[in-house]
Length: 123
Image (cartoon, rainbow, N blue to C red; front, side, top):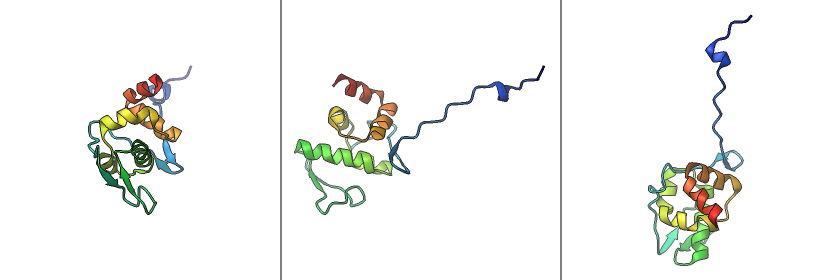
């Protein structure tokens, strides 16, 4: 009979799931929705790194432009401060079911914030 050690018999810890916004780039998700304190109205100009179009200004009063800006920031952000600066938690929650996001971006945010998943399922 062999001798079993705890390490050998213990089940392996599950590996964390890494969601990719695009190949080689993990999706960035904030710890809480309340830390998203970005603007809720007016004109917002995204930095070139987040939006590569010469017309980078979004009018948050226009629903389609608001959706478009949120989709781009969620997909392209690589620093938490980019999310905090450009997104607003309650607005993200309100828009969530209508956002057109890559599957991995949606999965990462819904895994961290189950309230978003519930909103999407209810829509």
